[in-house]
Image 1 (tube, rainbow, N blue to C red):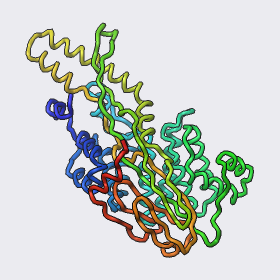
Image 2: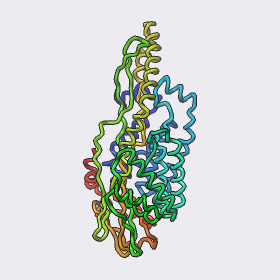
Image 3: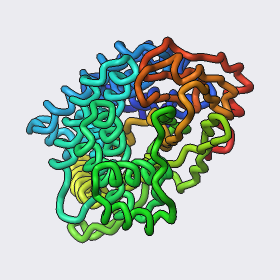
Length: 434
């Protein structure tokens, strides 16, 4: 059943999340500015408010409204915290009608990524303390989500960003702990270790005097430390590539022994994995460092759904059996109520395809040194960055970019560096993602 037909038959449920899904699909070509304007014209029901606020907050950050983005993401974070104790009414509605009547509370990855995105919002507004608080909260959330050997909700991107924030505060022992944890998470998942994380581990383990640990990293990575001199500074680039896939609805039949027959089930699924990352290059002097993936959000989204699938299938099966019994009883009366029961049974069964679907497909990072009198260039965007000492008298400059436009944030804040994209250029920037 198409979303339009479903909305016509079951308008009482509301279809805001289907409109949001469509906007997410169009985001790579429409761009964040037009998408935000269209999103703000939607008035979602309370049950879709978390998804709405997460998407709107992220788009505001992409569009340069850091304060507005933080406000929306903070509201979403507070709602998710309050929804962890699910009401009996919502549970009953989900059990008897469908999962979309439950208030969306985000996946384990969402519940950590909201802190990551808030930290970006604080950091590139110049508020290191605000970013530090978010990283501490992300750590608490990951500890709560950790169960046994599961990596659910354990995000290397959150650990790496925490390490950077701690370095900015000169809390080098805490930075080392965070970089270690990022490394452990990625190694557990058999993912390639980004060059920026390798450099962070090598340099800090050496300067903090953990020489045995340093030797292990040097052997594992096949490289040595790259310590900046007193005349060098470090650029650290965070890059959001693409837009994560939308969930889709899948319908199939299963045999139910309770009724000795077949029943129809609706379940969420992701399309087959086809993400092809695009990267940025940060060039300064003779050095050129390409961004590497520190968080493949396409994979995290599918892992989160895989962990939910058994519970979702059990709930959908029980719900379908209950609806079948109601339908059968009404049909035996051989009147209009039987026909209506059949229509309602079909129309009301819908997979919950809600997600934070305007997240990037991946979060990427790069780290390189440069003489303090030198500038840099983001090669693929043809954006020249000012000389290091024109931006800061410190030892680090942080950059934030997305494939969806050519806005560049810096820390310390220097004002938005921006080059407008034409529609053709925007399509070229994101072409080949899927």
